[in-house]
Amino acid sequence: MGYNTIKYDVADRILTITLNRPEKLNAFTAEMMGELIDAFDRADADDEVRAIVVTGEGRAFCAGADLSQGAKTFDYDSRPDSPRGEYGSPVRADGSVDYGHPAVRDGGGRVTLRIFECLKPVIAAVNGPAVGIGVTMQLAMDIRLASEEARFGFVFARRGIVPEAASSWFLPRIVGIQQALEWCYSGRVFGAQEALAGRLVRSVHKPDELLPAAYALAREIADNSAPVSIAMTRQMMWRMTGADLPMEAHKVDSRAIYSRGRSGDAREGVVSFLEKRPANFPDRVSDAMPDFFPWWEDRPYR
Image 1 (cartoon, rainbow, N blue to C red):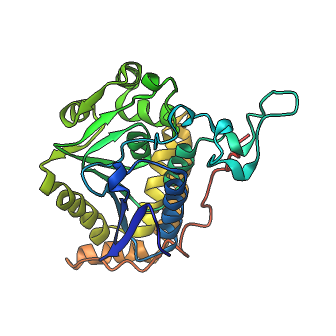
Image 2: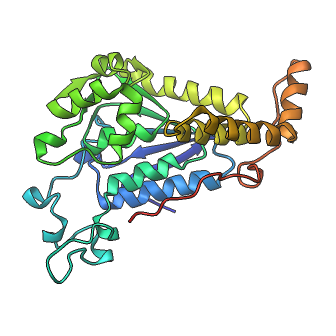
């Protein structure tokens, strides 16, 4: 399918998702939200996709929410074009708000929750300014690389709102609570070197070296690792960040090692190592995930 606000390109087992509103610095819209969710659905269903790189078209990664509605930007009830209009109003007849109503849900959070569920590794190649949702959408991605021209900003308090896209869960886990609060309290826009020092990004690159570095990392994963093992590892690591005791990890590790140890992938992994040749893993994410997957119960929005 074609998209209006993103590009979707698969080449040699690597998917590139490019935010594609360069004339608006790739500002986030409801349409972009829907297209990103669809793109990750497609990627999970396609066994040819072994890794995903997300970047921006033009000079920005994403300048945040599209502010073309001015003062009404975040007041969805007052906007005739509300991206949540399909759900109806959450305001009850008595004027109270039903906060469990789907129209209350944050669009950025819908995107990061979908990325969180992804079964493929996701690498952000941050080519330019990334503020608001432009930075918080990256937090559910696994590894972030930045151009020297990248700028970041958790600017919410300066706009009279609060961090979104589930960033109050993601950001402290990535950079620590002190750094997360400083950036969100101040709302200042900062450069790539500060992002590197604060552990928001893994590395900083010259502009023309950013995508090659991201693709080299994606290529290393795609060429050498079993896709089912990657899918399991991604979910194990992310979900254990919220576990209360290491026993929860031990339970999942034990099941996964037992299941994977009986697989064709495990046999191929060992034999290819002993024979000193590249592995050709037979199992596919689409039909070979362990029978206990998923091991969690989905939590509905209420």
